[in-house]
Image (cartoon, rainbow, N blue to C red):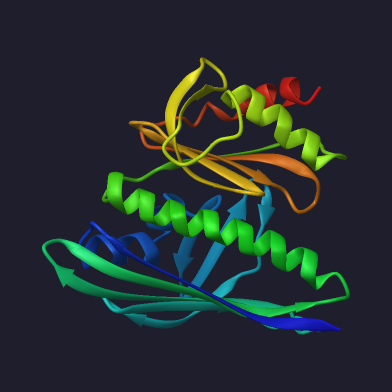
Length: 238
């Protein structure tokens, strides 16, 4: 048993087609809004989510300033994930961006995985929009840290929300984390929350395999910040 899926997302962004193309079709560009560290070489997109490699994704279309697409190979049980980006300049420095994620999820628990994927993809696309609106042309240093195992997700989110001063809504100003970072919430759903500062994007994700994940994007350096966020997660969920 399993399920095919297709998740389309679309937005008008205040960025040029050239800036959008850079964000969706280069390793440093993808680093600056998606997950982990990314590299594109010899027609293959490779992603490291923290220390965990994601399946390689082969580039299937690359039409500069118009369309970029890539897909993982099908596994023996039929699993694959494909991404397609369509961009169209709209004048005055704005661009229409459409991202369609499709594929097949095998197994009897495909619905749980689909829910996690859907919530995560909504966060990533919102981050792409946020990146293009506030940081276009800049390159982020990704910081990916996994907290301790979570056994009660409702309680885990209550703890994080308490740190943020209450359940967050887009536009809320919050303070949190090592050194009490101050920022504005730009996205929130049942499994993610995203916060923007003047030089970073901070994201917390409900890990499908049981940990709260800090998946941050730092635009002012920050290769050494991973241990600080891991220690903070460890203390928060001790």
